Structure formats: C-alpha cells, structure tokens
Amino acid sequence: MAIIEMSDLKLKNKRVLLREDLNVPLKNGEITSDLRIRAAIPTIKQALQAGAKIMIMSHLGRPDEGSSDLQFSLAPIAAHLSKLLKKEVPLIQNWVNGFEMGSHNLVLLENVRLIPGEKDNKPDLAKKIASLCDIFVMDAFATAHRAEASTCGVIEYAPIACAGPLLLGELKALRNIMHTPKRPMVAIVGGSKVSTKLGLLDALSQKVDTLIIGGGIANTFIAAEGYTVGRSLYEPDLIDEAERLSLNAKQRGAEIPIPTDVIVADKLSEDAESSARLVSQVDDNEKIYDLGPDTIKKYVSIIKKAKTILWNGPVGAFEIEQFGEGTEAIAQTIAESKGFSVAGGGDTLAAIEKYRIADKIDYISTGGGAFLSYLEGKPLPTISALEKHALQHEKVT
Image 1 (cartoon, rainbow, N blue to C red):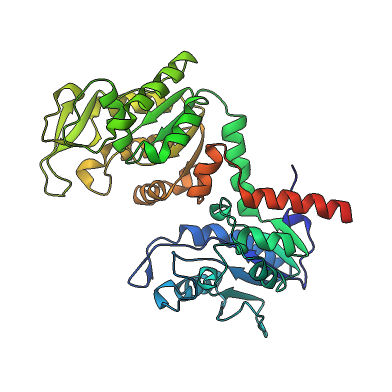
Image 2: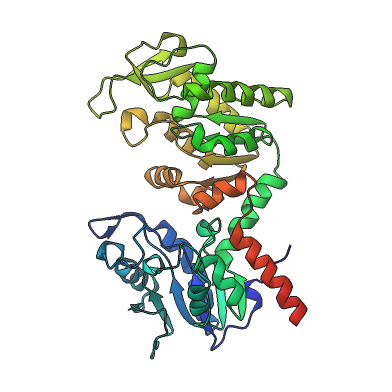
C-alpha cells in the first residue's frame, strides 16, 4: 500500500515536525558514535532547502516519563547537529503545549520520552504533538515497530503525515533484500542467544541460500551436532530448534554450515591465552569466543560468491582483538563484495565503525528492533498508520 512521501509535498513556510532517531550512545556526556545523526542530515537539509520551518523530535535512552534527569537531555545532540549543519540548532524545553521558534527555521525538541503518555501512545499527547505542525514527517525507521505517541499516534491527528527519505530508503532496501533478492543470497547472523533471534533465524532459513551463524548462537548449533561446547554460552533447551532449522534449510536446498573449528580461552579478557580448536576438541573448562581459521576461510568463500548479503551481528567477541578475526574477516569480505549488501543491528554498526567499512556497504540500517521485526515478517505499526493516513487523505482530496 502507498504512503505519502515528503519529497512530493510543498514544504515552503510550512511547520514541519520531523521525527528522527537521534538515540546515539553517550559516555560522560560525549557522543561516541554519531552514525544515526549523520543518517538524518540529508532529510534535514532537504527540508531546509525546501523552505520549511523544522522542529526535530527524537528520543534518547529509556528515561522514566516525567523525569528531569539531565543524562537524558538532547543537549549534546543539539550541539552536534549545530556543528554538522554549521548553524545554531536551539534545544526547546517544555515544548508539548506550544512554543515560538522566533527567527530560527530549525529547532530540536527535548527528549520526547520524558513526556508522560509517550510510550503508551496516549491520544491526548498525540493530539498535542500533531497540533504543532502542518506536516508530520516520520523518518525514524528504528522506532517504526513501536506504537508510541510521537511515531504512530501523531499520524492519526496530523493534517498531513508522510514518510521521510531515510525511512523510505530503509524500506526499499529491506523490501529488495527480502522479496526480490539476487541469488545466491547469504545471511550472516551473530549474537549471544538463539532465543532472541529465533524468529529471524526461522524467517531467513526459509529465504536464503546460506545462513551463516556465529557467537553464542553458533554454540547452540554446535551442541546440536553432538559436540561439547565446554563452559561456552549456549541454550540446551533450544537444541531441538537448532536441529529443526538446519533440517528445514536442508530440505529446501539451503545450508546452515556449522563451525568446524573455533577460538577458545578460559576467560573473556585481553590477557587471556587463546587457542584454535576443532569443535570436537573443546575442553570442558574452555569457552568459545570466535570462529576458527578454517571456518573463517569457508565462510569468506561463501560470502564472496553471494549476490545478496544480509549481515546482523558479529560472529565473535570482536571488542577484544584476539577474538575479532572472524568478525573482521566477514566485515572486510562484505565490504569488498560486488553483491548488494545490507547490514543492521547495534553491535553490527559498532563493528562497521571499528573496521571503517561504512562507505563500502550498500545500505546500513539504523533500525535495530524495527530492522529485525521487518525481517521476521512482523507488521510495523507506524508503517501501517502511514498507509492508512495516505488512504484517508486520498479519499478526502
């Protein structure tokens, strides 16, 4: 179903409320990764060039509603936006009941999650938010899986609600990779637990030609093959699920290759002594922290042949150098691939930044939970709301 696009609207002198995801990591008040902020810049510039009066709305962290805790203030984001855009971006406090922009054509509204009613999508709050604008632009795909007042509720009451370029780009990339992928298609899924990504693994096992697994997820699959994984993180109660996924993939001619060798140590530490082991040789007191050299070679070979690549999650404890060879090799192979590549997920973004390959991946999703929900085939409330609004707007016009 169609949705209204920001680029199709006349924005000159319009009050445009732009919902972005500027939920960036902070340490001691300093931004440690501005990837999400930089991703929003093209949309902001497009609206500025069109002559709009822009109010940017975002959340940061998970504060208690009604809190005044300064650690959740968007002040650092306002300062960083000012630097990137080379113009002052004032931070507006207590904005929900209305405010004056003065001579400014761009302002940032304080953390929307500090306002009571946001998380529960209260209609009264959604109406107040909608009353601030002539046009609401939903550009925060990362929040599209949550029915909140600033993402979903406002769409119902805004005069016009549309999708921004960042959200549209995300949808296009994900639709391409899930509905019309060029083959062979390879997915790399890492993470600590099968249980947190069971829906994703299930969906991908029915879609891809090869599903490469890593991290604690791989340990459960290794255990399902009858090998000991020592003291490694794994989920014995999901061994049956691992066997089912492997069998389902095999029945449709696909593959979920299991690591043949791994990197082990007795602790997760920079000074730990690590060793390569065949999966049949892991001791009871050892923990698996990365893929072994032979497995890395095999996976790299598979990825090199792929025409479509989806990457979600590191395959080892890459934060520590001696446990990062698997993730780095996969990252560099994806970067060098001529296939269409999409990468997403918080830890994936951290790996992309660490290995400096952001400009070599075709599409980097800032979506997080929404990214996973879409890949699992779950409906996204905000996208549904935009579709419904477009249909109603079409009937009225």
